[in-house]
Length: 138
Image 1: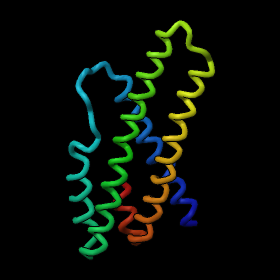
Image 2: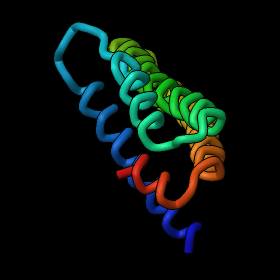
Image 3: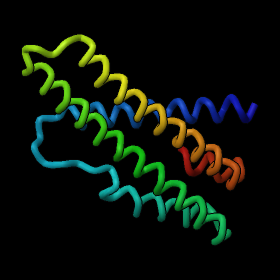
Image 4: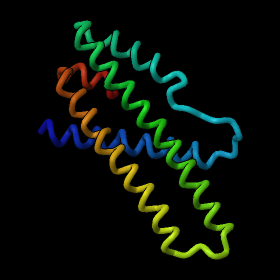
């Protein structure tokens, strides 16, 4: 039962992160947006309020910071994909294979990131009780 709930939470978090990244990558703003701007402080405050044990709280905070950094790296990966796609589109001699290579590189990078993301979620989940997890994820 915990596995099913953990899978649902992981799926929900992935959907939220992907939605944020799509909104950020599609925005017309010229300023760079990073998820880490205020997220680290908010995460640390939430963990401090939720987990009374300082040692576990410190570990969960660090894991959360890693998640935030991964989400920020996804934004950078999407920007790189966009730039490479535009460059290929401007190159009259670019082939479908060139485009496929760009996408394959992007997917490989993101697959590694999602593997790290999953591992961090499981590590984080192992550090907290059911009650603490619900407070942290709701």
